[in-house]
Length: 143
Image (cartoon, rainbow, N blue to C red):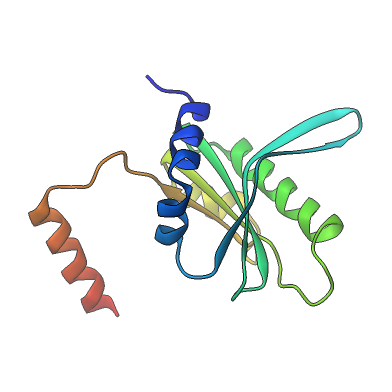
């Protein structure tokens, strides 16, 4: 079994590849960003910024299945950035939870409809070639 810090370290070791996978315009700002209030410390796994979207993108890793507490924690991080960090003229902060498994019904029930928070399942390996080709074909048909 691995821990969240193991996953985070693996990503940071390959940050350039990770940023390229995320898309165009992503910039790395901070790993384990610490912020405090009410004498409690909180640590956000990754803070990115997207030049084209003009917003912060906060990434938190979860080694297990997504829980409603994880969504609440990310909402707190996003609210903190929107209220105390982002500058006038920048777009709302986006939160991304990368976890072992997600439950879309849980996400919809927990978050407000206008939340800029997304939960996605990560893969530790690529699927076999035939499955990957099938998925690519399906995605292209959807577009």
